[in-house]
Length: 522
Image 1 (cartoon, rainbow, N blue to C red):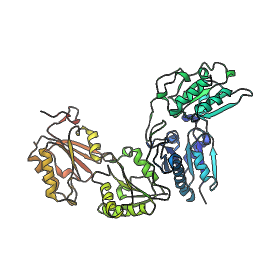
Image 2: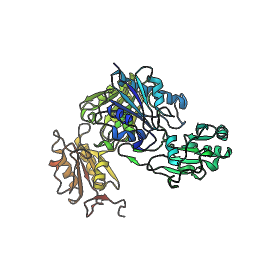
Image 3: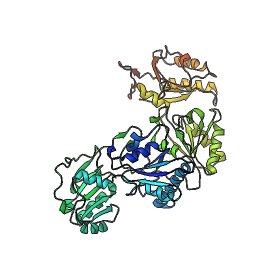
Image 4: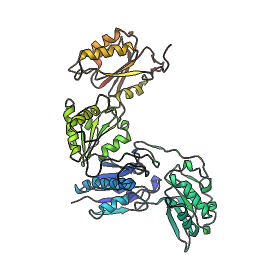
Protein backbone atom coordinates (compact mmCIF):
# COMPACT_ATOMS: atom_id res chain seq x y z
CA UNK A 1 0.00 0.00 0.00
CA UNK A 2 1.45 3.35 -1.00
CA UNK A 3 1.61 6.52 1.01
CA UNK A 4 -0.63 9.50 0.41
CA UNK A 5 0.52 12.79 -1.14
CA UNK A 6 -0.71 16.08 0.30
CA UNK A 7 -0.21 19.55 -1.18
CA UNK A 8 -0.68 21.83 1.81
CA UNK A 9 -1.17 25.59 1.58
CA UNK A 10 0.22 27.68 4.42
CA UNK A 11 -1.30 31.06 3.65
CA UNK A 12 0.44 34.37 2.90
CA UNK A 13 2.71 34.62 5.93
CA UNK A 14 0.80 35.09 9.17
CA UNK A 15 1.25 31.83 11.14
CA UNK A 16 -2.32 32.18 12.40
CA UNK A 17 -3.59 31.95 8.82
CA UNK A 18 -2.41 28.33 8.55
CA UNK A 19 -5.61 26.29 8.52
CA UNK A 20 -6.47 23.76 11.20
CA UNK A 21 -6.44 21.00 8.59
CA UNK A 22 -3.03 22.03 7.27
CA UNK A 23 -1.57 22.02 10.77
CA UNK A 24 -3.02 18.58 11.50
CA UNK A 25 -1.67 17.03 8.30
CA UNK A 26 1.78 18.56 8.77
CA UNK A 27 2.04 17.09 12.26
CA UNK A 28 0.83 13.66 11.13
CA UNK A 29 2.99 13.28 8.02
CA UNK A 30 5.89 10.85 7.82
CA UNK A 31 7.72 13.13 5.38
CA UNK A 32 7.57 16.93 5.03
CA UNK A 33 8.98 18.40 1.81
CA UNK A 34 9.65 22.06 1.05
CA UNK A 35 11.41 24.13 -1.60
CA UNK A 36 14.23 26.61 -1.26
CA UNK A 37 16.83 28.41 -3.33
CA UNK A 38 20.54 27.68 -3.04
CA UNK A 39 20.82 29.27 0.39
CA UNK A 40 18.65 26.49 1.82
CA UNK A 41 16.27 28.81 3.68
CA UNK A 42 12.58 28.05 3.25
CA UNK A 43 9.67 30.39 3.95
CA UNK A 44 7.28 27.43 3.93
CA UNK A 45 9.36 25.46 6.42
CA UNK A 46 9.47 28.46 8.73
CA UNK A 47 5.68 28.76 8.69
CA UNK A 48 5.21 25.04 9.30
CA UNK A 49 7.79 24.71 12.06
CA UNK A 50 5.32 25.03 14.98
CA UNK A 51 3.47 21.98 13.66
CA UNK A 52 6.46 19.73 12.94
CA UNK A 53 7.27 16.89 15.32
CA UNK A 54 10.38 14.97 16.24
CA UNK A 55 11.25 12.04 14.02
CA UNK A 56 9.75 13.37 10.80
CA UNK A 57 11.81 13.13 7.62
CA UNK A 58 12.43 16.51 6.01
CA UNK A 59 13.07 16.63 2.26
CA UNK A 60 14.74 19.91 1.23
CA UNK A 61 14.11 20.53 -2.49
CA UNK A 62 16.69 23.04 -3.68
CA UNK A 63 16.00 24.85 -6.95
CA UNK A 64 18.88 24.46 -9.41
CA UNK A 65 18.41 28.02 -10.68
CA UNK A 66 16.38 31.03 -9.59
CA UNK A 67 17.15 33.21 -12.60
CA UNK A 68 17.45 32.29 -16.26
CA UNK A 69 21.25 32.27 -16.04
CA UNK A 70 22.45 28.67 -16.30
CA UNK A 71 24.97 26.55 -18.14
CA UNK A 72 22.58 23.61 -18.32
CA UNK A 73 22.50 22.14 -21.85
CA UNK A 74 18.72 22.48 -21.88
CA UNK A 75 18.79 26.08 -20.74
CA UNK A 76 16.68 27.41 -17.89
CA UNK A 77 13.66 25.27 -18.71
CA UNK A 78 15.81 22.18 -19.01
CA UNK A 79 17.35 22.78 -15.61
CA UNK A 80 13.96 23.33 -13.97
CA UNK A 81 12.35 20.31 -15.66
CA UNK A 82 15.22 18.10 -14.57
CA UNK A 83 14.94 19.41 -11.02
CA UNK A 84 11.21 18.68 -10.82
CA UNK A 85 11.69 15.18 -12.21
CA UNK A 86 14.43 14.46 -9.65
CA UNK A 87 12.43 15.96 -6.78
CA UNK A 88 9.35 13.95 -7.78
CA UNK A 89 11.44 10.77 -7.83
CA UNK A 90 12.67 11.49 -4.31
CA UNK A 91 9.10 11.90 -3.03
CA UNK A 92 7.94 8.85 -4.98
CA UNK A 93 10.50 6.73 -3.13
CA UNK A 94 8.78 7.64 0.14
CA UNK A 95 5.28 7.12 -1.26
CA UNK A 96 6.24 3.71 -2.66
CA UNK A 97 7.47 2.75 0.81
CA UNK A 98 4.07 3.61 2.31
CA UNK A 99 5.05 6.93 3.84
CA UNK A 100 2.64 9.88 3.70
CA UNK A 101 4.25 12.99 2.20
CA UNK A 102 3.21 16.60 2.81
CA UNK A 103 4.56 19.14 0.32
CA UNK A 104 4.45 22.63 1.82
CA UNK A 105 3.40 25.62 -0.26
CA UNK A 106 3.24 29.31 0.62
CA UNK A 107 -0.19 30.75 -0.07
CA UNK A 108 -2.31 28.25 -2.00
CA UNK A 109 -0.73 25.16 -3.63
CA UNK A 110 -2.49 25.72 -6.95
CA UNK A 111 -2.03 29.50 -7.12
CA UNK A 112 1.39 30.03 -8.76
CA UNK A 113 2.65 27.42 -6.31
CA UNK A 114 5.64 25.11 -6.68
CA UNK A 115 3.58 22.18 -5.45
CA UNK A 116 1.69 21.97 -8.74
CA UNK A 117 4.80 20.60 -10.44
CA UNK A 118 4.92 17.70 -7.99
CA UNK A 119 1.17 17.22 -8.41
CA UNK A 120 1.42 16.91 -12.18
CA UNK A 121 4.10 14.25 -11.86
CA UNK A 122 2.70 12.24 -8.94
CA UNK A 123 -1.06 12.70 -8.50
CA UNK A 124 -1.95 10.15 -11.20
CA UNK A 125 0.16 7.51 -9.43
CA UNK A 126 -0.72 8.00 -5.76
CA UNK A 127 -3.77 8.99 -3.69
CA UNK A 128 -3.54 12.75 -3.41
CA UNK A 129 -5.26 15.56 -1.56
CA UNK A 130 -4.74 19.31 -1.94
CA UNK A 131 -5.40 21.54 1.05
CA UNK A 132 -6.10 25.13 -0.05
CA UNK A 133 -4.53 28.10 1.65
CA UNK A 134 -5.22 31.83 1.87
CA UNK A 135 -3.67 33.41 -1.21
CA UNK A 136 -1.30 36.36 -1.16
CA UNK A 137 -3.88 38.34 -3.16
CA UNK A 138 -6.49 37.80 -0.44
CA UNK A 139 -3.94 38.71 2.22
CA UNK A 140 -2.90 41.88 0.40
CA UNK A 141 -6.52 42.95 -0.09
CA UNK A 142 -7.18 42.50 3.62
CA UNK A 143 -4.04 44.44 4.56
CA UNK A 144 -4.96 47.24 2.18
CA UNK A 145 -8.53 47.35 3.50
CA UNK A 146 -10.02 47.38 -0.01
CA UNK A 147 -12.40 44.76 -1.44
CA UNK A 148 -11.05 43.04 -4.53
CA UNK A 149 -14.28 43.25 -6.55
CA UNK A 150 -17.93 44.24 -6.16
CA UNK A 151 -21.15 43.18 -7.90
CA UNK A 152 -20.41 42.14 -11.51
CA UNK A 153 -16.80 43.24 -11.58
CA UNK A 154 -14.05 40.96 -12.83
CA UNK A 155 -10.77 40.41 -10.97
CA UNK A 156 -7.76 39.94 -13.25
CA UNK A 157 -4.66 38.22 -11.89
CA UNK A 158 -1.52 38.75 -13.96
CA UNK A 159 2.11 37.60 -13.77
CA UNK A 160 4.65 40.42 -13.69
CA UNK A 161 6.75 38.47 -16.19
CA UNK A 162 4.50 39.54 -19.07
CA UNK A 163 5.92 42.06 -21.56
CA UNK A 164 5.18 45.66 -20.56
CA UNK A 165 2.89 46.30 -23.53
CA UNK A 166 0.82 43.16 -22.93
CA UNK A 167 0.55 43.83 -19.21
CA UNK A 168 -0.54 47.43 -19.88
CA UNK A 169 -3.25 46.22 -22.31
CA UNK A 170 -4.73 43.98 -19.62
CA UNK A 171 -4.61 46.74 -17.00
CA UNK A 172 -6.38 49.24 -19.29
CA UNK A 173 -9.52 47.07 -19.37
CA UNK A 174 -9.43 45.55 -15.88
CA UNK A 175 -12.03 46.38 -13.23
CA UNK A 176 -9.57 45.25 -10.55
CA UNK A 177 -6.20 43.55 -10.89
CA UNK A 178 -3.42 41.89 -8.97
CA UNK A 179 0.06 41.58 -10.49
CA UNK A 180 2.21 38.81 -9.04
CA UNK A 181 5.88 37.86 -9.37
CA UNK A 182 7.55 41.21 -8.74
CA UNK A 183 11.14 41.43 -7.51
CA UNK A 184 13.34 42.00 -10.55
CA UNK A 185 10.26 42.53 -12.79
CA UNK A 186 9.11 45.55 -10.78
CA UNK A 187 10.41 48.39 -13.03
CA UNK A 188 8.62 46.93 -16.07
CA UNK A 189 5.45 46.33 -14.04
CA UNK A 190 5.36 49.91 -12.82
CA UNK A 191 5.89 51.13 -16.39
CA UNK A 192 2.89 49.04 -17.47
CA UNK A 193 0.67 50.68 -14.84
CA UNK A 194 1.84 54.09 -16.08
CA UNK A 195 1.21 53.22 -19.75
CA UNK A 196 -2.28 51.99 -18.81
CA UNK A 197 -2.98 55.28 -17.02
CA UNK A 198 -3.76 53.65 -13.65
CA UNK A 199 -0.51 54.18 -11.72
CA UNK A 200 -2.12 56.86 -9.56
CA UNK A 201 -4.59 54.39 -7.99
CA UNK A 202 -2.32 51.34 -7.73
CA UNK A 203 -0.91 50.02 -4.47
CA UNK A 204 2.12 47.98 -3.50
CA UNK A 205 1.93 45.33 -0.75
CA UNK A 206 5.00 43.47 0.47
CA UNK A 207 4.95 40.36 2.69
CA UNK A 208 1.26 40.78 3.42
CA UNK A 209 -0.03 39.70 6.86
CA UNK A 210 3.46 39.31 8.36
CA UNK A 211 4.96 41.55 11.01
CA UNK A 212 7.18 43.00 8.28
CA UNK A 213 4.55 43.92 5.73
CA UNK A 214 4.90 47.13 3.73
CA UNK A 215 2.06 49.06 2.10
CA UNK A 216 2.50 52.18 -0.02
CA UNK A 217 1.43 53.70 -3.34
CA UNK A 218 2.98 51.81 -6.23
CA UNK A 219 4.39 55.00 -7.71
CA UNK A 220 6.47 55.66 -4.58
CA UNK A 221 8.27 52.31 -4.40
CA UNK A 222 12.05 52.13 -4.79
CA UNK A 223 12.69 49.24 -7.25
CA UNK A 224 15.87 48.31 -5.38
CA UNK A 225 13.83 47.37 -2.28
CA UNK A 226 11.29 45.04 -3.90
CA UNK A 227 11.47 41.33 -2.93
CA UNK A 228 9.80 38.46 -4.74
CA UNK A 229 7.17 38.19 -1.99
CA UNK A 230 5.26 41.30 -2.99
CA UNK A 231 2.50 42.26 -5.41
CA UNK A 232 0.80 45.24 -7.04
CA UNK A 233 -2.94 45.77 -6.55
CA UNK A 234 -5.29 47.84 -8.66
CA UNK A 235 -8.43 48.16 -6.52
CA UNK A 236 -11.80 48.73 -8.15
CA UNK A 237 -12.89 52.33 -8.52
CA UNK A 238 -16.18 51.30 -6.91
CA UNK A 239 -14.57 50.37 -3.59
CA UNK A 240 -13.80 53.93 -2.48
CA UNK A 241 -10.68 55.25 -0.77
CA UNK A 242 -10.20 52.25 1.47
CA UNK A 243 -10.30 51.37 5.13
CA UNK A 244 -9.04 53.90 7.62
CA UNK A 245 -7.37 50.99 9.38
CA UNK A 246 -4.86 50.50 6.57
CA UNK A 247 -1.42 50.10 8.21
CA UNK A 248 0.68 53.24 8.33
CA UNK A 249 2.84 53.68 5.27
CA UNK A 250 6.41 52.54 5.75
CA UNK A 251 9.18 53.40 3.34
CA UNK A 252 12.03 51.41 4.88
CA UNK A 253 12.77 48.13 3.11
CA UNK A 254 12.06 45.14 5.29
CA UNK A 255 14.98 43.02 6.43
CA UNK A 256 14.71 39.25 6.40
CA UNK A 257 14.15 37.82 9.90
CA UNK A 258 16.27 34.81 10.63
CA UNK A 259 14.39 31.57 10.96
CA UNK A 260 16.10 29.67 13.82
CA UNK A 261 17.18 26.90 11.48
CA UNK A 262 16.72 27.95 7.89
CA UNK A 263 17.15 31.71 7.99
CA UNK A 264 15.63 34.64 6.14
CA UNK A 265 12.06 34.35 4.96
CA UNK A 266 12.69 36.18 1.72
CA UNK A 267 12.87 35.57 -1.98
CA UNK A 268 16.15 34.40 -3.46
CA UNK A 269 18.06 35.12 -6.60
CA UNK A 270 21.18 33.05 -6.01
CA UNK A 271 21.88 30.72 -8.93
CA UNK A 272 22.91 27.19 -8.05
CA UNK A 273 25.14 25.05 -10.23
CA UNK A 274 22.89 22.44 -11.75
CA UNK A 275 23.34 19.03 -10.16
CA UNK A 276 23.60 15.65 -11.74
CA UNK A 277 22.04 15.10 -15.13
CA UNK A 278 18.99 12.82 -14.92
CA UNK A 279 20.22 9.26 -15.00
CA UNK A 280 23.81 10.24 -14.20
CA UNK A 281 25.48 10.10 -10.83
CA UNK A 282 27.24 12.77 -8.83
CA UNK A 283 29.65 12.96 -5.93
CA UNK A 284 29.75 15.79 -3.41
CA UNK A 285 32.13 15.96 -0.47
CA UNK A 286 30.31 17.69 2.37
CA UNK A 287 31.59 19.32 5.54
CA UNK A 288 29.20 19.11 8.51
CA UNK A 289 31.05 21.66 10.61
CA UNK A 290 32.49 20.90 14.04
CA UNK A 291 29.44 19.68 15.95
CA UNK A 292 26.16 21.52 16.33
CA UNK A 293 23.59 21.25 13.55
CA UNK A 294 23.44 25.01 13.16
CA UNK A 295 27.09 24.96 12.07
CA UNK A 296 26.20 22.93 8.97
CA UNK A 297 25.81 25.39 6.09
CA UNK A 298 22.53 25.51 4.11
CA UNK A 299 24.48 24.50 1.00
CA UNK A 300 25.78 21.38 2.76
CA UNK A 301 22.32 20.58 4.12
CA UNK A 302 20.90 20.79 0.59
CA UNK A 303 23.53 18.40 -0.75
CA UNK A 304 22.80 15.92 2.04
CA UNK A 305 19.07 16.15 1.36
CA UNK A 306 19.52 15.45 -2.36
CA UNK A 307 21.77 12.42 -1.94
CA UNK A 308 20.81 8.78 -2.49
CA UNK A 309 23.83 7.49 -0.58
CA UNK A 310 25.78 8.90 2.37
CA UNK A 311 29.35 7.68 2.80
CA UNK A 312 31.64 8.40 5.73
CA UNK A 313 33.15 7.58 9.08
CA UNK A 314 30.39 6.07 11.24
CA UNK A 315 30.22 8.74 13.99
CA UNK A 316 30.03 11.48 11.36
CA UNK A 317 27.18 9.74 9.52
CA UNK A 318 25.35 9.46 12.83
CA UNK A 319 25.16 13.26 12.87
CA UNK A 320 23.04 13.25 9.69
CA UNK A 321 19.32 12.84 10.35
CA UNK A 322 17.97 9.47 9.29
CA UNK A 323 16.05 9.38 6.02
CA UNK A 324 14.67 5.98 4.95
CA UNK A 325 15.00 6.97 1.30
CA UNK A 326 18.76 7.15 1.70
CA UNK A 327 21.40 4.48 2.28
CA UNK A 328 24.19 5.12 4.76
CA UNK A 329 27.57 3.45 4.23
CA UNK A 330 29.58 3.80 7.48
CA UNK A 331 33.21 2.71 7.66
CA UNK A 332 36.25 2.90 9.90
CA UNK A 333 38.26 6.12 10.04
CA UNK A 334 41.41 4.36 8.77
CA UNK A 335 40.11 3.30 5.35
CA UNK A 336 39.82 6.68 3.61
CA UNK A 337 41.10 5.51 0.20
CA UNK A 338 38.76 2.53 0.17
CA UNK A 339 35.86 4.74 1.25
CA UNK A 340 36.63 7.21 -1.52
CA UNK A 341 36.83 4.46 -4.15
CA UNK A 342 33.49 2.99 -3.04
CA UNK A 343 31.82 6.39 -3.21
CA UNK A 344 33.26 7.15 -6.66
CA UNK A 345 32.13 3.75 -7.95
CA UNK A 346 28.57 4.41 -6.78
CA UNK A 347 28.59 7.83 -8.45
CA UNK A 348 29.88 6.31 -11.69
CA UNK A 349 27.00 3.78 -11.50
CA UNK A 350 24.46 6.62 -11.43
CA UNK A 351 23.95 7.27 -7.72
CA UNK A 352 23.93 10.70 -6.09
CA UNK A 353 26.56 10.31 -3.39
CA UNK A 354 27.51 12.59 -0.50
CA UNK A 355 30.81 11.86 1.23
CA UNK A 356 30.53 13.24 4.74
CA UNK A 357 33.32 14.82 6.79
CA UNK A 358 33.32 16.64 10.08
CA UNK A 359 34.49 20.24 10.03
CA UNK A 360 35.73 21.25 6.59
CA UNK A 361 36.24 18.35 4.15
CA UNK A 362 39.30 20.03 2.66
CA UNK A 363 41.18 20.27 5.98
CA UNK A 364 42.73 16.92 6.97
CA UNK A 365 39.57 15.23 5.70
CA UNK A 366 37.92 13.41 2.83
CA UNK A 367 38.12 15.92 -0.02
CA UNK A 368 41.80 15.28 -0.72
CA UNK A 369 41.33 11.52 -0.35
CA UNK A 370 38.46 11.49 -2.85
CA UNK A 371 40.28 13.67 -5.37
CA UNK A 372 43.46 11.62 -5.06
CA UNK A 373 41.60 8.38 -5.86
CA UNK A 374 39.51 10.04 -8.56
CA UNK A 375 42.57 11.40 -10.35
CA UNK A 376 43.93 7.88 -10.85
CA UNK A 377 40.94 5.55 -11.14
CA UNK A 378 37.82 7.69 -11.71
CA UNK A 379 38.82 10.66 -13.92
CA UNK A 380 35.35 10.65 -15.52
CA UNK A 381 33.50 11.30 -12.23
CA UNK A 382 33.20 15.01 -11.36
CA UNK A 383 33.72 15.82 -7.69
CA UNK A 384 32.20 18.85 -5.96
CA UNK A 385 33.57 19.99 -2.57
CA UNK A 386 31.40 22.01 -0.19
CA UNK A 387 33.19 23.83 2.64
CA UNK A 388 32.38 23.57 6.32
CA UNK A 389 33.34 25.45 9.46
CA UNK A 390 36.65 24.05 10.70
CA UNK A 391 37.44 23.06 14.28
CA UNK A 392 40.01 25.87 14.41
CA UNK A 393 37.39 28.45 13.47
CA UNK A 394 34.90 27.04 15.96
CA UNK A 395 37.33 27.01 18.89
CA UNK A 396 38.61 30.47 17.99
CA UNK A 397 35.08 31.90 17.92
CA UNK A 398 34.31 30.50 21.36
CA UNK A 399 37.23 32.31 23.02
CA UNK A 400 37.42 35.46 20.88
CA UNK A 401 39.78 36.00 17.95
CA UNK A 402 43.08 34.15 18.44
CA UNK A 403 43.36 33.72 14.65
CA UNK A 404 43.29 37.46 14.10
CA UNK A 405 46.73 37.47 12.47
CA UNK A 406 48.82 34.95 10.51
CA UNK A 407 48.36 31.36 11.61
CA UNK A 408 48.96 27.80 10.49
CA UNK A 409 47.22 24.48 10.98
CA UNK A 410 49.25 21.34 11.70
CA UNK A 411 48.20 17.76 12.29
CA UNK A 412 50.21 15.88 14.89
CA UNK A 413 49.25 12.55 13.36
CA UNK A 414 52.20 10.60 11.98
CA UNK A 415 50.05 8.02 10.18
CA UNK A 416 50.67 9.62 6.77
CA UNK A 417 53.89 11.55 7.43
CA UNK A 418 56.98 10.87 9.57
CA UNK A 419 57.10 12.26 13.11
CA UNK A 420 60.41 14.03 12.46
CA UNK A 421 58.69 15.98 9.66
CA UNK A 422 55.91 16.97 12.09
CA UNK A 423 58.44 18.24 14.65
CA UNK A 424 60.44 20.11 12.00
CA UNK A 425 57.34 21.91 10.74
CA UNK A 426 56.26 22.67 14.29
CA UNK A 427 59.62 24.25 15.15
CA UNK A 428 59.60 26.36 11.98
CA UNK A 429 56.02 27.55 12.60
CA UNK A 430 56.95 28.47 16.16
CA UNK A 431 60.08 30.31 15.00
CA UNK A 432 57.97 32.21 12.45
CA UNK A 433 55.79 33.39 15.35
CA UNK A 434 52.60 32.02 13.84
CA UNK A 435 49.55 31.09 15.85
CA UNK A 436 49.42 27.30 15.55
CA UNK A 437 46.25 25.18 15.58
CA UNK A 438 47.03 21.54 16.31
CA UNK A 439 44.67 18.92 14.90
CA UNK A 440 44.76 15.24 15.96
CA UNK A 441 46.77 16.26 19.02
CA UNK A 442 46.85 13.06 21.07
CA UNK A 443 45.42 9.56 20.67
CA UNK A 444 45.66 6.28 22.54
CA UNK A 445 48.15 5.12 19.93
CA UNK A 446 50.20 8.35 20.25
CA UNK A 447 50.10 9.28 23.95
CA UNK A 448 53.61 10.82 24.10
CA UNK A 449 53.84 12.97 20.98
CA UNK A 450 51.97 16.01 22.32
CA UNK A 451 54.40 16.09 25.26
CA UNK A 452 57.28 16.07 22.78
CA UNK A 453 55.58 18.80 20.72
CA UNK A 454 55.25 20.99 23.84
CA UNK A 455 58.97 20.62 24.57
CA UNK A 456 59.81 21.53 20.97
CA UNK A 457 57.65 24.65 21.22
CA UNK A 458 59.28 25.70 24.47
CA UNK A 459 62.64 25.74 22.67
CA UNK A 460 61.54 28.90 20.83
CA UNK A 461 58.43 30.15 22.65
CA UNK A 462 58.20 31.57 26.15
CA UNK A 463 56.39 29.67 28.88
CA UNK A 464 53.75 32.41 29.14
CA UNK A 465 52.60 31.90 25.52
CA UNK A 466 48.80 31.68 25.47
CA UNK A 467 47.35 28.21 24.87
CA UNK A 468 43.68 27.43 24.16
CA UNK A 469 42.25 23.92 24.41
CA UNK A 470 38.81 23.29 22.98
CA UNK A 471 37.07 19.95 23.44
CA UNK A 472 33.88 18.80 21.66
CA UNK A 473 33.16 22.39 20.59
CA UNK A 474 29.60 22.58 19.31
CA UNK A 475 28.80 19.26 20.98
CA UNK A 476 27.09 18.30 24.24
CA UNK A 477 30.37 18.03 26.16
CA UNK A 478 31.89 21.31 25.03
CA UNK A 479 34.76 22.49 27.20
CA UNK A 480 37.21 25.38 26.76
CA UNK A 481 40.40 26.13 28.69
CA UNK A 482 42.77 29.06 28.38
CA UNK A 483 46.20 28.47 29.87
CA UNK A 484 49.89 29.04 29.08
CA UNK A 485 52.48 26.89 27.37
CA UNK A 486 54.27 26.46 30.68
CA UNK A 487 51.13 25.36 32.54
CA UNK A 488 49.65 23.32 29.68
CA UNK A 489 49.27 19.59 30.52
CA UNK A 490 49.18 17.43 27.35
CA UNK A 491 47.82 14.55 29.45
CA UNK A 492 44.40 16.28 29.59
CA UNK A 493 44.03 16.21 25.79
CA UNK A 494 42.42 13.58 23.55
CA UNK A 495 41.36 13.31 19.90
CA UNK A 496 38.19 15.32 20.52
CA UNK A 497 40.34 18.34 21.34
CA UNK A 498 41.95 21.09 19.32
CA UNK A 499 44.99 22.81 20.82
CA UNK A 500 45.81 26.37 19.78
CA UNK A 501 49.23 27.88 20.54
CA UNK A 502 49.28 31.67 20.46
CA UNK A 503 51.96 33.92 18.99
CA UNK A 504 53.93 36.58 20.85
CA UNK A 505 51.06 38.96 20.03
CA UNK A 506 48.25 36.80 21.43
CA UNK A 507 46.63 38.33 24.50
CA UNK A 508 43.97 37.47 27.09
CA UNK A 509 41.60 40.27 28.06
CA UNK A 510 40.38 40.99 31.56
CA UNK A 511 37.13 39.18 30.74
CA UNK A 512 39.02 36.09 29.62
CA UNK A 513 38.71 36.53 25.87
CA UNK A 514 41.66 35.76 23.62
CA UNK A 515 42.79 37.74 20.58
CA UNK A 516 45.83 38.15 18.37
CA UNK A 517 46.45 41.71 17.26
CA UNK A 518 46.19 42.39 13.53
CA UNK A 519 49.16 44.74 13.84
CA UNK A 520 52.62 43.22 14.16
CA UNK A 521 55.46 45.20 15.80
CA UNK A 522 57.91 46.86 13.44
